[in-house]
Image 1 (cartoon, rainbow, N blue to C red):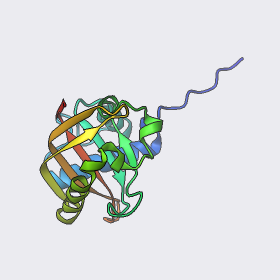
Image 2 (image 1 turned 120 degrees about the horizontal axis):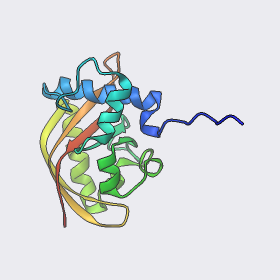
Image 3 (image 1 turned 180 degrees about the vertical axis):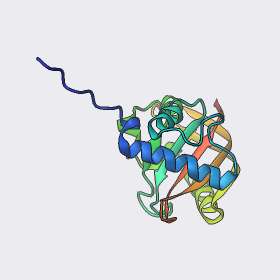
Length: 168
């Protein structure tokens, strides 16, 4: 009896590896600094995807849908720190409308920040209130938001990273 080959976890699929490279290169373009310090510029896509998923910073990305539309952008990436913070597994968070990461009263200010980041390509110092899958509220601070561009330079989404958060 031969064993079936194991499928890679969702965050290590070829598509996720490509997205990880996109997140890294667009962050470098937007802020002039690496998203993950010490990761070699010539690291393999697999290593980049592993390091990004395992990073202690919280990292989320959504597709390029208009933030003013319904349902708006959908999440396309969440690293392990984000999965823990929002208390959701990968299959539940990826594909979810990203507006659901914030409670209804906070969604207008969140949308304004996304529009500002889109207009400027990137913003630093964003702060807001978010809500996890169980209704637990938490504040985020000093977040960076940036535009994702595909290999032809077309906008294809946005990403956010932060390390400072606390429960409310």
